[in-house]
Image 1 (spheres, rainbow, N blue to C red):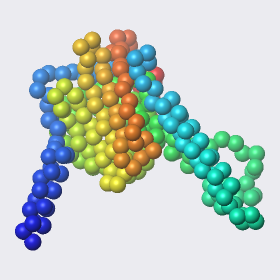
Image 2: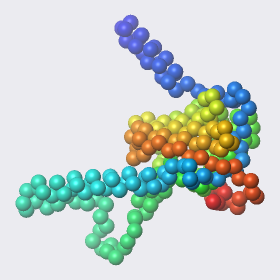
Image 3: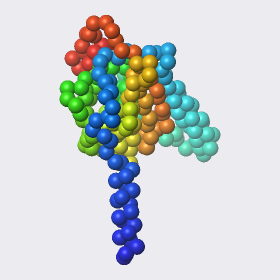
Image 4: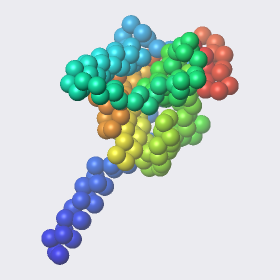
Length: 228
């Protein structure tokens, strides 16, 4: 009984340390606010990385399907394709189905595929991130629950870790996303993203650099944010 109690306490302490809240304010003044434009020459392309990953996954599936067909006993019908349209559906229809389109859009949102980023700081610990795919409002030093693009409920930790502004989201037995922002010595905004856990994006690491916009304020998209 004592051993079990000690293990419980140790596990709780480990969990607290592993997911400790970030700082509400940086140790030195850092200004991330402004309109930022993607520097494509020095940045990873998450959309291309996702396309390549999905193409490899389709190749693996096709190899598996061919092996299944080769080993299927003669006369046994092929397995039912649950995604196939019903017989009365228009066979001439082309392109992804609506659920496939929504799923792909959610993946692009999770990858923050946008050529622009606006960061506002209406208060010392409150930030607003506006891109072509979404608008998010967060508070530094907070631990809350938020909805992921695919609808899962995630624990979220937000705040400063040294010079990095960090947004971490974790879904129980689901995707885990880590985002980090900081200013480089050359004045660019560096953005790092990493996905792990049970997700199609697991293993993806993306680093992007943004230049501060010096021209007029961009035209706003009423649904998401400034247009590219």
